[in-house]
Length: 234
Image 1 (tube, rainbow, N blue to C red):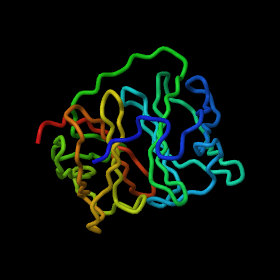
Image 2 (tube, helix red, strand yellow):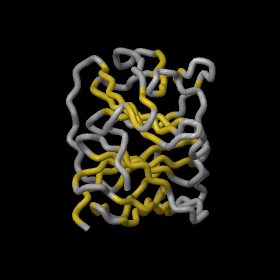
Image 3 (tube, one colour):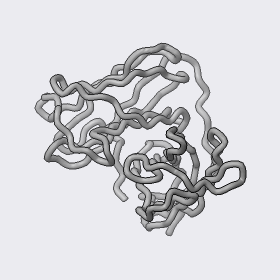
């Protein structure tokens, strides 16, 4: 699995300055442009998983993860989305995109949000509860080898079998390597079943600790379950 998302440029494009509210709790917009090596804004993109651009934002300690889809101004090339930071800290902003006629790339920048904060030290966890949904992640990560991960979704002790498609599948998984936040984009295997299990094929590039975020949709709402796994040697 390729590791990307650690640089502001890749291929023939680069991520411009990210503009966002300066402090937590301040309402505003998050905006940016993607430009060519010559400085021209990119205004045409290919769709991937139903969207032209996937915006992933997470604090560098793994907290406050968000996966959003901003709106493009096709005249100026500026992407915008309403934005309010939940907490202070240093954030990594990832843009996952494919310029028209180009290759898929993941670009990133850091954004500082003013205020005091204490970074958290993520510890391994394979179970997450969000809005009454309990999600258990089964399986392991291995450096340089493919493994299977299975997310099992239950509610009130009963298996959830009415998950709804989101971005072309019943689950969307992002993994970030702790430290440099190298970005791994993992999609569910297409078995056509709306739960309770969502299966993924994953390959960690190196040993170490990984932060994983599963987006799933039920009852019209997208929720995120967070996990932490350690990758060992294959």
